[in-house]
Each structure stands twice: as structure tokens, then as C-alpha cells.
Amino acid sequence: MEPLSIGKVKIETPVILAPMAAVNCASFRLLCREAGAGMVTTPMLVCNQVVANPEKIISRTCYLKEEKPISTQLLGSDRKLMEEATRIIDEFSDVIDINLGCPEKDALAIQAGAFFAKHPEQIEKAIAPVISATNKPVTAKIRTGWDEKSIKTLEIVRILEDLGIDAITIHARTKKQKYSGKADWDEIMKAKEQANVPIIGNGDIFVPGTAKAMMEQTRCDAIMVGRGAIGNPLIFRGIKALLETGQGLPEPTEQEKIDSFMRFLKYYKKHEKVRAFTELRQQAMWFTKGLRGARSLRDKLMRSQTVDEILSIYSNT
Image (cartoon, rainbow, N blue to C red):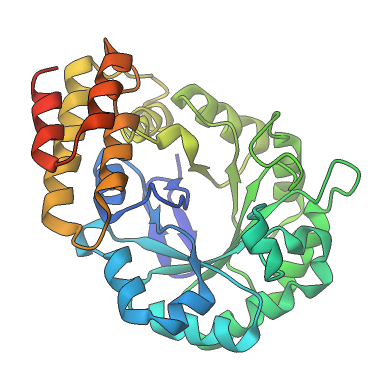
């Protein structure tokens, strides 16, 4: 297992936490770093929201020294707003990532995210302003195309390289697929064969074995884990061990899973000052995955109204 270098940023373990809205609070990111993630990513930040209310966005994102290196992901297409947003988040970020793959309506409405999978000729307006506004490495996260009839992975990779991008993450699905179906790892492999910058593979990594399989099959430089980490930050421990030694670790015990959430709760109480209780409750429910009596636990958590109630529910598990 080789470290990953993105520009001047060295990532010791080539396994990265993907940007996920309503998941990647500072406490969760820190837990993933401790478990073995080489770098973590903020939730996607929309450039116009960053510019309109920078203090609120920075406070909510809650950057921590202990979680570095950290990548901040921006979404947008307006040149001026992308440049201004970059200047705002620059001092907090080790890497700045541009979202070129979000398939949701809100992103498409501002001609951002997966809009660029359909219109790669317009990618420059989202990338160039960011590169001009920072000395930090700039990366992009893409999809393979709009649908299965318009796969444009290699075209997008070429455009990004010509613009001076430092690394590219490929979620090996189309916009039309969203998160359904199977990720086409062959597209990652083709991009790796062509590209002169690091290629980071993403899609369908839910257990350590698939992380290793992706790296072996595609020869990608690193992997990015998204949904497989929700409620399960210990997946990074397993992936790191498997990549370093070739030997897998036993599945986390029930007590280890409970301890992991308790650690998350400790960090949450310490660091998260502006997040809604409903977000904490949702995290608590995700962490029940794999626990005995998980359905009963989730029923109790749904009725909880305070942090102490959640603590009591987990303490009595």
C-alpha cells in the first residue's frame, strides 16, 4: 500500500471518507480519521450559501485540527461565487474538491453537479475560478456520464487534466443511476490507464474486501468510501489493515460498535454547537446497524428527545 500524494498533501493511507450531507459532521469525520481514513471530506458546501453566510457555514462545518488532512467539497457553477467561496474556505482546507457529480434536482437547477456529466464542455467555469483562487490542491469528483448511452468518463478526465486538476475521484455510476444498480469499475480502470493524475475509485465499497478488490481490479491510486461508512466508521480500520497486511480483521464486536458510538457522542457534545438534535438522533440510529435488537433500539431512539436519553439507550444495550 503506497501513500497518496495530491499536490503537496501526503495522505498516508489511500482511503478517503466521501462527502455526505447530514452525515459528515466534525465528530463523525474525526471518528473516521481515528479508525484509519487517510483523509476526510466535509459535506458538500454550496458556493452561494458559503458566500451569503460564511460565518454560519464555517461554524456548522466545524473544522478540527485533529482531523487533518481535510478536503472541503464545493458545489457550484457561477465563476464569481466559486472564486469567492474558495477564498472563504481556503484557510481551513488542505484540499478543495469540486462536485461534478451530484444527481439531485437542486444541483442540476443551478447547472452544477451532474449537469457537467451532460455538458462537459462547460466544466471549466466550475474549475478554473477555484484553481485561480487557491494554492491548495484542487480535485474533482465526477460520474461516468448522464446515462448508460452517454458515458463520458475519459472525456471528462481529459478536460480536468487540461485545466490543471490535481486528482480525480470517479463515482462509477451515471447520473441516471443515482445510487442504484452496480458501479462500473471498468470506467475507473480505463481512466487510470489514461490519466496522469491520481485516480480515486468510488462506488459499492461496503466491506473491506471490496476496497481491496477495487484497487486490484482498477489499479486506482486510492479509494473513497461513502455509504459503507454510515454508522460504521470502523470500516476504515478493516480496510487499512487489509491493504497494509493482506490480512483481514475480525468483524467489529458488538461492544466495539457501541464504544464507537459512545466516542462519537463524546465528540458530538464537545464540538457540535449548531446542529439540530434530529441529526444526532439519525446518527444514533445508523450506528445500531449490526447490533442485537436493532429494531427495538431504533424504536426507542425515534422517541428520544435529549442527548442523555440517547446515552441511556446505548448504555443499557
